[in-house]
Image (cartoon, rainbow, N blue to C red):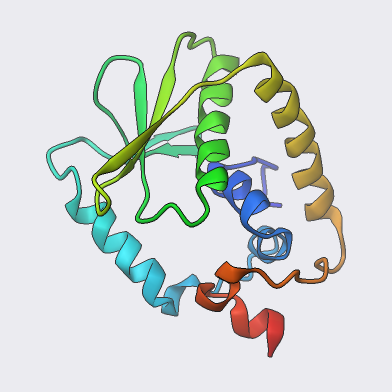
Length: 166
């Protein structure tokens, strides 16, 4: 894991997308630099909600895309392919901020290309599950080798596809 053993929102996101991808990321093996999907996502990030003050970085651990309405943090995504991962990433942001004393926050995932959004709230059950997830992320980080890849529909568009399957 990174030098200060921080668990970031990206790590929580990758936990739900693919444990093998998470292991690569935790061990600083990054393949996104050449990915067309990543380039499209960065372009969307740069152009969507251009008037907002974006990329609010807290403790070098969470990076909130922007905060518009009071107490609502926003995460911008290009598609709903891995929506569960996006929801848990936002729940982690809410959890992290709650641990820092910020109560009554909500999250919103914005899909500007789809002109849709999803509200996200943090429940006590979510907090319990997040504690387990954070422990599992630490365990994955400690593994010498990544887990076997489970081929999913999203694999063919993943930047790590060649590393996992070729």
